[in-house]
Length: 228
Image 1: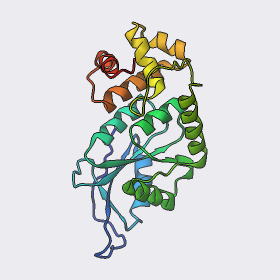
Image 2: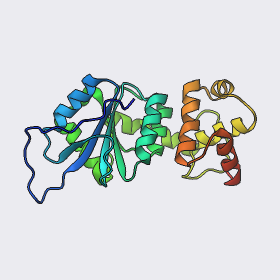
Image 3: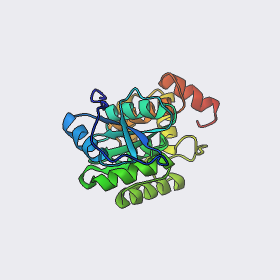
């Protein structure tokens, strides 16, 4: 997915003053057209220094552009957030509620709709991500608040009042409990009223966040920590 990593070339752009710290930003996109548009906007921002995806020079921001948040995007996002001190800005066409929780659980707090992207909005999102602040569209923020509220009160699909905390979401516990019961991905999807892709994303997010090897390791971890 990251085959269009930004290459660094000399460009005409405003020169920041010595007191200005530029933010290294690597752009990742599925298609060259999306990447070219984002790069064109960012080159007009004096606070931004475009780098390629091999950059390891301390704090930086990775900007990931995708149509939807699918399993491919989740894999790429997981790789990006594991990079040392890297913050992520997501630019998407749409995202479903379960995937939104996966994104937030990985520590991403800056998301833009592709239809609303302008130079100023990209600049604002990059600055917010670099500072560790949140930047979500109002409708997405409302969806997130409502979703988290349902998770906390147990009104989500197939929620059981098992032991949970901020480390693992109730929905993730539900999935791992069913994996422990011997159910396959399709059966879990039917039980929880989710797609099979969503169930796979949930398991992948858990194994990535807690640095587990596979779903069996995830079940063992959940049992050991008292989640199930």
